[in-house]
Length: 292
Image (tube, rainbow, N blue to C red; front, side, top):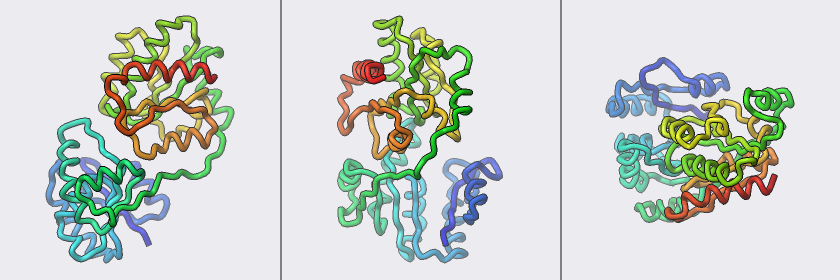
């Protein structure tokens, strides 16, 4: 049997907890009063005593840290899942640094790609503990014509326009800002080219992205529909999928785009050249239009 322990602050439940329970997965909620509520350690120990698990898994830098310093790894096998780092604020940068203290103590560490495995090794995790397991997705069904048609009929989208789609959290490493600047250059050099850029997602960069769209005169060229629980209709709408990230591991959105049969243009990483970050999105967009 699998059970989940998850953090929740300031609300009784959330969509993740509700979805797990709807699928008959038992959930223990760790109640937090603040960002650094150390009562979480006591709650974790109580959950372990009640559940008596054979293995504990953690899936984020905060949970890695709390597991490491709860004392529980002295009594239980612990597998840490490393999905990569973000650095949108001071809190996350601190947590990332703490991971160097946390993950070396795990019984095993699973990550999604070889560059991440190398990074873990440099941060003190024994190579013998690291397993690389790329992401995977379920098989998909083509979105209904009605759902796609409803998106296509949104005000302002012309029948002749080609749709460039990007999906992801709005944070700096995802480089939506670069893509917006690339779209502006594309529109400036090819003003008659009919295209629309759709950016699905939400996150700390949202306000800056909206400001950039406005200042670059792209209000009629970009659509930000927000976070979407069901992205299938957007893949059905897209003529091409664009992923301009500076840093990725094993991105689910690329797997999904392939599964839906959408052509892809993406940056290649590791060690993405910073000086090229403004020119490459234009290249991406031009390649995208040529492929349509």
